[in-house]
Amino acid sequence: EGMYVFENGKFSATAAAPLQSQSQAPAQATRAASGWVGDIEDAFSAAGYTWLDFVARENIGVVTGVAPDEDTKRRALEAATTAIMADPTGGTEINLVVDGISVAEGEPGPGASVAALARGGISQDACQQALNETMEGQKIQFPTNRGDISPVSMGLLDAVAGIAMLCDDFNVEIGSHTDSRGSDEYNLVLSQKRADAVKHYLEEKGVSTEQLTAVGYGEGVPLDTADNAEAWGRNSRTEFKISRQP
Image (cartoon, rainbow, N blue to C red; front, top):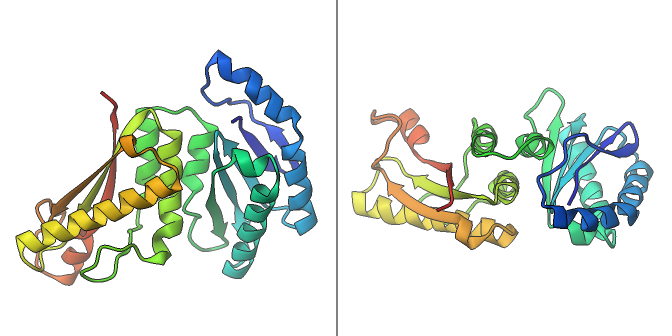
């Protein structure tokens, strides 16, 4: 636990501390004194990625920064993940590394909002905003008429998992929607398969099963009632909604 930022070749604790009980403070102090942050700092510097930032809160790590191109981003994320997970303490403390690296004149990293959430306060509104921003203009991809998740969406779902894990005081509904093609019954079954697949993926990443609810809505809640390709694209979607636990 604890929160650090990697800037200008140095790791430092941020002013905003994560929410914690008094009983957690001694453990955090012990971990901070263990030197794992310094070891990761050395690994980042040795790899030459001085433009990377690193935010860690609880067991979530987000690697951010702006890469000059996609290939450099890929190599930097691999190097950062290796440095974190290979460290004896960092590899134990950090259970999920999220890609928040943007590409110059390209798309922001899928984990940009996770980093912002980790730096700030955790609330129902902040968690919902982080999910909304993460999914803005993005879609969880599935092969046509199938319920298994496309590999291209795994980085996006890792960001969703990071938000859910930081927001573990709240429930998350996974709502899957289809377009109007096919029968109502078929679409209801397909949407439930897709919602269940997302739930299973998030659970595998470390999100609590009790925190998640998977709901397949079929074609019953369209965003666009037109019968054309544009409407089909809008209506086939996955939504995430935060609510308070009972």
